[in-house]
Length: 120
Image (tube, one colour):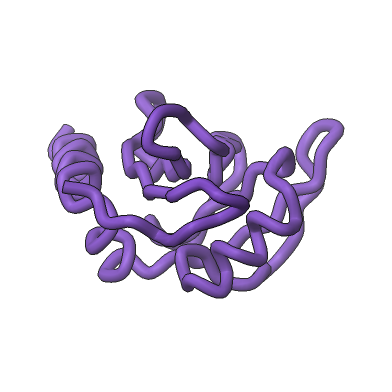
């Protein structure tokens, strides 16, 4: 059962955790009770990350939503900004212990995919 992140602009938001199929990096999004609200991550598969708990923030997310997620500690503050093709993307760190509180099943599946990838 997903735990509510909080109310944002009249919508109850929930965290969704999955993994990208091509590299098993963590995928994060926020959803309402009915729909996808916004992608948090973008998969820049050509860009290196220091560890599994680092993400690139989707540049299409509004500044207001990003501030909301930072206050809730869902995502950290910008560590570094990278140019990738025509866009600039911030790398941030996420706290796995906190994330799994919001979507335990999604986090479990992400870990399973990551572990399977390491066995190959």
